[in-house]
Image (cartoon, rainbow, N blue to C red; front, side, top):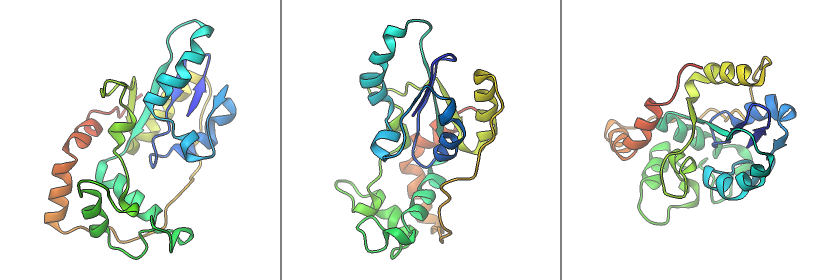
Length: 201
C-alpha cells in the first residue's frame, strides 16, 4: 500500500495485479509506504479503513481516494498457479510444481478448508468495506495498466515508467472446457467486477 498525501491517493496492493512494479516505480514518491512482508504490503481495504485511515484524519483536507487494480479472474488464478510453481517453493505445502492447473482449480473451488496450494481468497474480498460492500473509488483493469499509469501521472504531476517485476515462471495452464465453464460460473461476480473496471484514465 502506498499513500500520497498531496494528491490524497491511497494505492492498494492487490496481490498478483502488478503491484510490485507499481511499488518499485512509486514508493520513493509516497509519503507512506507499506512494503516488504506480504501481510504489511497487502493491507486490504478494511484494514486500511480500520487501522490507517484514522491516523490520516488529523491531517484534515479532502478525503483520501482509494485506487486498486483487478485482474481477469481466470488469468489471476493462472498467475497464482505459476507463482507457486517456482523452484523456491518445491517441497512446500503451497507449491503447485507437482500438480496440474486443473487440479489447482478444482481444489480452489472445493468448499471448506482448501489444500495449502489452493488457499486463496478472491480479489473482490480485498476491496470490500466492513459491510462487505465493494468500496474502492478507482478500480482499473490489470490489462489496462497504461490507463492507471496515466491516471497516477496526472494526479502526482510527474511521469511514471513501470519496470517489469515479479514475473512468474512459465507453466502449462490449460483447462478442459467443462472445468473452465465451472470456474467461470463460480467466479461470475468477480468477472462482472473486472468488466466494470476502468480502462481509461
